[in-house]
Length: 113
Image 1 (spheres, rainbow, N blue to C red):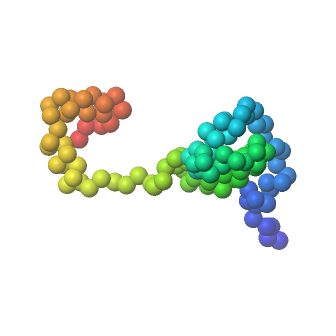
Image 2 (cartoon, one colour):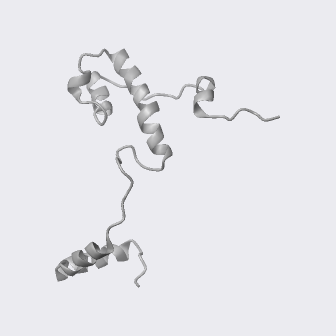
Image 3 (cartoon, rainbow, N blue to C red):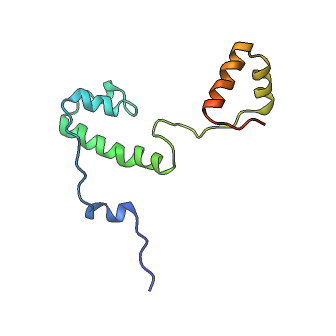
């Protein structure tokens, strides 16, 4: 017998409610919602409406981005730099900048080639 695939949405209602951090004021809600909504767009909402909006944003905006392996603030995945542009950038560096770069790479334990 094939069982129905489990997903977050099918089990969401059965999961215990997570313990929430107490939000002290509307300003705290504004700060938490700031990456998604400008303050002017949500300033007329009540605290209950702000809490419901925050729950919705967490479910639709933050959780999918974390599931993809990135932070919620990342709009795009990192893109590799063009090797020619990198070569030109390294050639244009001063001796002090090169020394600082080598020190950072050493601290990150990047093997030298």
